[in-house]
Length: 109
Image (cartoon, helix red, strand yellow):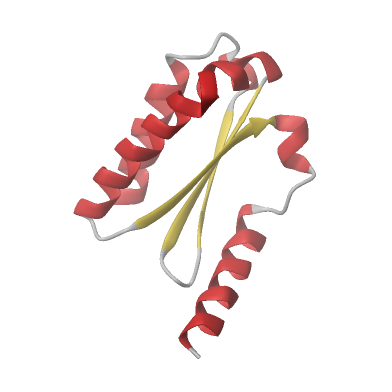
């Protein structure tokens, strides 16, 4: 199992143990040309509150754990959590990866 898939499995396990509506949950994964692996968690609105936690502490802890694991494999990650209907209006994982890659190229110039 490669590192992004292992991180996805870990993220799925953590999220599944926090939510009450697993049938409405999904996790999308995307890769940018800059090497960033993006995870987008879509949940039922009630579950978003559980995963984000008070003052964002729960999602911050999840990000910290993912970042530590990703650093072992020399990866950079991005995690977004939101209600399914909210994230549908945002850019896709692939569009986000393209935008981040373009920003990285501009930063190098």
